[in-house]
Image (cartoon, rainbow, N blue to C red; front, side, top):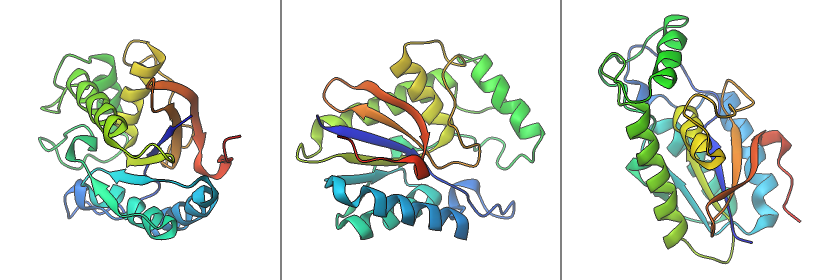
Length: 197
């Protein structure tokens, strides 16, 4: 059955002097995506999508080059909008993130609400699934926050009760049936990818 692999971008270069959406993948993140691309090669991936944020585009470009497809961008695949605060250093960042998931209909410090971000990411994945080629898997490179929100929708649980990506640095993926838009496999690390039987 056709599948979507929804991937959270792996490790990035942290640079508080530039906007977070412009952060690139780190060398480690690039290496991990290259290995994931090689693992995906036998599956006949038909399409690669990403958000327009640099780290997601970097990952999609690596995949697309190895897999021989043209990467496509959908802005609705972006992380929850955090422009109101910009970069927040840990541990304060993680406290704000927890408040974001715990209060899905409230804007935390001006951020896009979790409920709105969930509606957006579910809509984007649904739109891509309905318009993409049916002869091979689709890969979507996106972000951890909206990935969790998508997982909550697919698991049919309240926001904040969903399973979390297995790698806190990024580089985890969900496997989704692209016809029924149901969850086939919850979070796994990209190093754990195995070709579907």
